[in-house]
Length: 345
Ligand SMILES: Cc1ncc(COP(=O)(O)O)c(C=O)c1O
Image 1 (cartoon, rainbow, N blue to C red):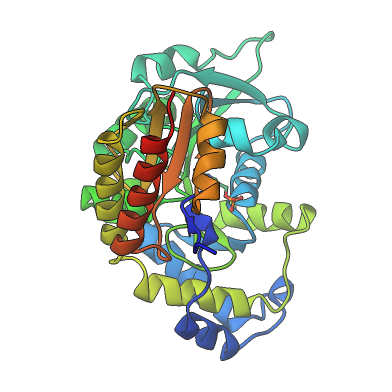
Image 2 (cartoon, rainbow, N blue to C red; image 1 turned 30 degrees about the vertical axis):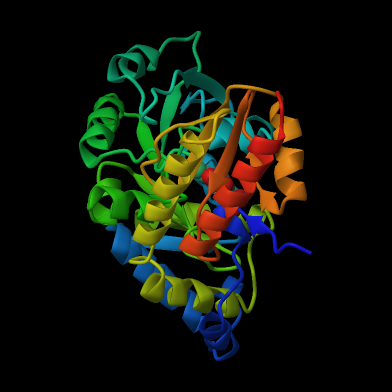
């Protein structure tokens, strides 16, 4: 049996033996009572890293975004989202169903940003007729835009437009450390223009579970109640927070290798006839399929032990991570090359 090379997502990584040892040794308490010293340490550390006053540990990136939406707005308010945003496409409509928000979508540009003139135009004047525009959400790195990293300057420009009109800004920074490494810009600089920022430990950072939402003390106090409402109050969560702390200590600098591997993967795929990868800036490689059906290709890849996911019409996605090294990338390319050679389309 060929060993599968799993490039579906950077969420497929398994905790390393030293990370598991850190989890086993974690000091714990009941976090809903505020008693878990490891969670408290993680929240303080995360807030400091992104330059905010406070932080809240939550089970997932989806919950971090939903809690942010709830804590920034009230039912019937309007949120401005990119039309390729994760909140819009992959969070099961929680923005409408649970937060009760009207969504105003603006076209995402290829670099994951929005046009500032579009944001300006989308902010409604306060009238008796319209929903109040309360929140702008940005995403860094941008998943559906192929892991594009949003610069601090672009973030500041877009956030500036919103905040000048009294609209708060949330940054879905699920992969903000990838952005930080790719742009050589500290995460607090990337997050500075935004009122709140969330990021995930369970993606490129390689922890098994967990995300964090950061913002002002007052905002995080409100967010804590919404986490409880959603059932996200965990008890001896220090076991999970220990993995996240380990990841912050050991798994940030190595992201540069994931980005190099993604570039090599894209370069290799580009030389195999039917595929046109978008040159990656970070660890996500989006590939346009020029010949044949995407699902057929993905099935053949899987039979050869290479896992990827469909990513909209005529596209698939591959993501590099902690559990694939350069040799795995070369092996994946060799397997795909053999399939493409043997496939007459
Ligand atoms: C940009 C972005 N935001 C949020 C999430 C949600 O994270 P989770 O899967 O932990 O709910 C993801 C997951 O892939 C993501 O890519």
